[in-house]
Length: 185
Length: 280
Ligand code: SF4
Image (cartoon, rainbow over all chains, first blue to last red; front, side, top):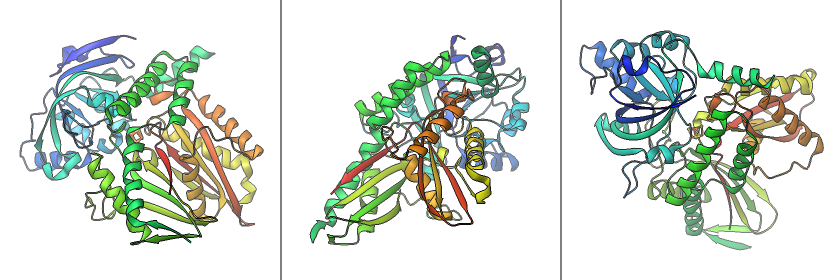
C-alpha cells in the first residue's frame, strides 16, 4: 500500500499501474456530476450534441456540495453513492472518461467497462469538510438549474482518494474485507 | 399552563439545525475515536482518522461535516401543560428548518414529492412525530438524516414463528447488503414490534439514539452487543475497505405487537449520526 500523487488530466500511462487499495492524492481539474447531470450528458450524446466539457481523459466526481460559505472556495463536498450513475457510466467510458470518484459498489457492467480503460476511486464518504478544503477553485459550467447537482469545474489539490476498481479487474470492496479476514486467521 | 412562543421555537430549531450538521455529537465522536484506537486494519485505521479529522475541521470552521445535510426528522414531545402561542407548532419547526438551512449554508435536499421532484429550496418539510407527555416542557429531538444510509434501510413483517433467529438473520442480511454504500462505520437502528409504521419509527429512534445510552432492557442490551460483534466479524470495515469497525453500535427499540406478528425494521445511519436535543 502506497500513497501516489497524480495530476489530471489522467492518461493510460498514469493509471495502468494503479492497484486497488492504493491511496492517491489527486491534483488538477476535475468535473462534478450526479445522476441528473449524467442523464443530460447521455441525452446530449444521443442527440449528437456535445457534453458541456470534453470528457476524454477526465475525471468525474460524484458530488452535490453544500452552498459555498463566504470566505471559502467551495462548500462541503464528500462523495455521493455511485450506483445511481451506473446506468450512464459505460457510455461515458466509451467517450474517453478515465476516472470516477464516488463511494460504494459499482455494477458488474460498470466493472467490466472499467477493465483496461478507466479507474474507479472512492473518496472518504462523509469527509466533506476535509474534501471541501482540497478544492481551491470551483465554477459552475453547466446545468445551473440543477443547483447542488449542477456541473462544476473544480481545481483540487491533494484530494485524498483510494483506488477501488483498478483497470485489472480488482475490486477493493471484495478484496479488502477478504484480505483483512485472511490476515486475522 | 405554560406558554411557549412560536418565535422561540423557530430560533431554537434554526440554531439546532446549524449546530447538528457542523458539530458531530460528542457521543458519536467519542465512539469513533475509541474504535479508531482499537482498529487493526491499516487502511481502516486511516479512514477512521480521516473521519475524525473531518469532524474537527467541520467544528472549527463551522461548516457541514457532510454535504448531505439530510432531511430533518423531529421527534417532538409536548408536555400536556404547554401551550404554543403565535402559530402552529408544525409551522414553527418548519420555519426553523428553513432558516437554519438557508442561513447556515446547508444543502437543501428536499423535493416537493417523489414524482415531480421539484426542490423546495429550503429543505422543508421536516418529518415530525408528535408525542404528548407529562409536564410543561417542549422537547425536540432533531436529526439530519442523509439518504445514502436511509436508502439502505429495510423493513419486514415476520410471523412469530420466525422468532428472534429470523429477526437476527434479517438484520445481518440488511447490513451486509448495505456494504460500503452508506459510509461505514454505521449506527444500526433496529425496531422490533409495534405494527408496520410503528416499527419503522422505532428503528429511526434507535438509529439516532445517543451512543452512550445503555439499554435498560438486559435482553436487548445483550442482543445489541451480539449483533454488533456478528456484524463487525464480517470484516467489511470502515468505508468497506476491510477492518473490524463496520458498525459503531447497534441500537434496538422495542414495542408491544400483535399475537400474529413480529415486525422488524432496520434503519441505517452513518458515522455522520447527527442528532441534537433541545428543551424549551
Ligand atoms: S451516508 Fe452519511 S456520511 Fe455518507 S454521504 Fe450520506 S449523510 Fe454523508
